[in-house]
Length: 73
Length: 328
Image (cartoon, rainbow over all chains, first blue to last red; front, side):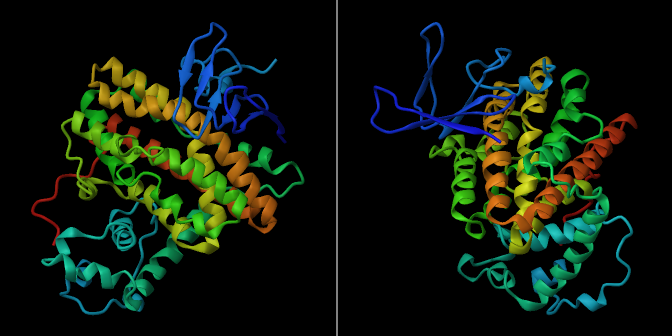
């Protein structure tokens, strides 16, 4: 099953919830934007987003399901 | 039955149904009758009412003989769906693992791969007209389950549906995005416009969702169906978008699928782990129903993909022939 992890951003007073799906993306609930490694900001209006963790998404930083076709090492 | 809706027949008698078709999942008339009865619970029928304040469909929605007739069709339909799915895995393996195995167990041909590589513009237009029967009321059938589940499941389900309904933005409602797609393909985007051209299997795909949604008893099947639907969407939608761009079709057509690549990558996780996971944690007796709903989705999709590709391989349309004269 999934394990829960919560973090508090410095910018907001409300909580953002992050949960890593086994062999899948990170589900981020309550965020207005995701900042990528290069500092680029990706806004979203969805209540929950799936952030790519496999590094192969063609719609990074968002998950596009590609992890499902990558052989698991 | 059409006469009952139009007022020329005053009572439907389920005992008068003689000889239901052998293969109800592919039968055009059976599925159109059921679709019509279900539609009384969605938008109804504009053309029944001369005066909108006195719409016969308002009364027919809860009229006993109409409901009894629907029930007779539903019993046959549900039996056919149960006969279609393989045996339920009742092992002690984690529920989510068993659910994912059902969802990933589809064996049919890939309609998305065909559209990606080979489909013509006309074939894409036919497929979109066929799908409009569902997509112009996209997500509505699963919303029936909202008041029928526990609070934890409800929170997850509404989060998913909220996104389907545009997250507060009317122009991002998925049914609206699909209407934009139809407009961009120069197809009629009005609700129900292509109903008469939709074959039985396409209506069955839609009716299954209404069957599961309108019966509280089948709420587990509805949520299992939702999980399977969302989990088999993201990668195929990318293929559809690629096929649509290959054909040089307008941006609004590809945009619908782009949105679903991203949205459904989220929704599948929420639907499997939060909606279905919480539902069976709160109500373990619904496990079988959730797995049945997921399996029924997978098997009916196999019928749909096979039927569409067979029609195309014969050089035919995947739509029913144009009717001569309107249905009364």
